[in-house]
Image (cartoon, rainbow, N blue to C red; front, side):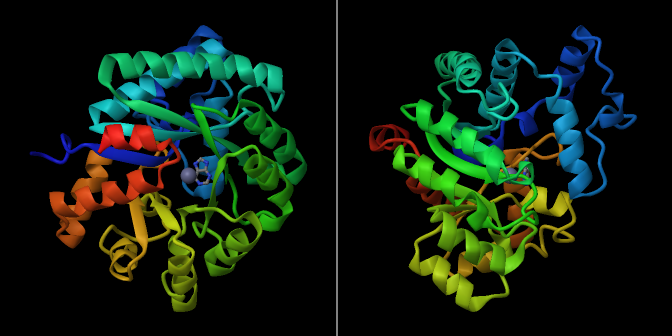
Amino acid sequence: MSFRELPKIELHLHLEGAAPPALIRDIAKEKHTDISGAFDERGAYAFKDFPQFLKVYEAATSVLTSPRDYGRLTRAVLENCADQGAIYVESFLSPDFCGGGDVHAWRDYLAEIEEASREAERDTGIIHKGIVTCIRHFGPEAAKPIALCAAETAGDFIRGFGMGGDETVGHAGDYAWAFDCAREAGLEITSHAGEWGGPESIRETLRDLRPTRIGHGVGCFRDHALIDTLLENDITLEICPGSNVALGLFPSFTAHPIARLRDAGLKITVSTDDPPFFHTSLTREYEELSRAFGWTETDFSEINETALAAAFCDDETKTKLR
Ligand code: HPA
Ligand code: ZN
């Protein structure tokens, strides 16, 4: 069996970040919008560092202006995920981009995303769940209506609440109101931390947002006390090695700390983050990790079991996927 066919669980995927460049260009053309600056001469997303990545991400997303656009996006993304062997995917959904944080507009976007997810499940068997996500560099006040959108739509499809964006802005605790609101509505909690922010950012996130999972979290790798804290709190890391390498956090897969974190006993999982931006796919992540660390199908099966255990879906869905 090749890694492509291996059944996979993906826990860390930004829906807009998974948009095929061709789809974004088609939609831009239909709307007579010029976003050619977002692409290089070969048609790939073009950026040279993380701040520019966020700008290009937002430029590409700016052409997605209707629920119908998000239906098209969801169908395209889930088709690609299924093609990579993914059987279960959680994606980050941003009401900031889907109706500007207005609950009524968000419900319309969500209806299309859910319909596209049902179609994809019917066609390929893939199961998709959503994590509503606030965007850190939009600030703590902007995060409040996003949490209300999440709380209002918590249910079988919307399972969690999270935060992406620029981790170097403010403190995790500034967003505690939003996370408390989402938690009280029964949502599971994850947050990006320790991608750009280092150990202190992870500590603040654990203390103030109380997640069960951390997006990236790789910034803990030199801090043994923090690794102990992550172990004690049974935290699962959503690690995206190809994203970290593409953005220059580590020079190569070989230099990436994922194997050291796994050896330390941490619950690690493998995801793609924003695959076309980082020229990656689930299969490529597995292949590169196998090349770098000698990991085999047995290792990846164990990693996928860890991922399924930490997934935000209900137990019935987990049983079906085992
Ligand atoms: N990190 C932080 N925020 C993001 C990312 C990422 O890789 N992708 C989309 N939003
Ligand atoms: Zn991410």
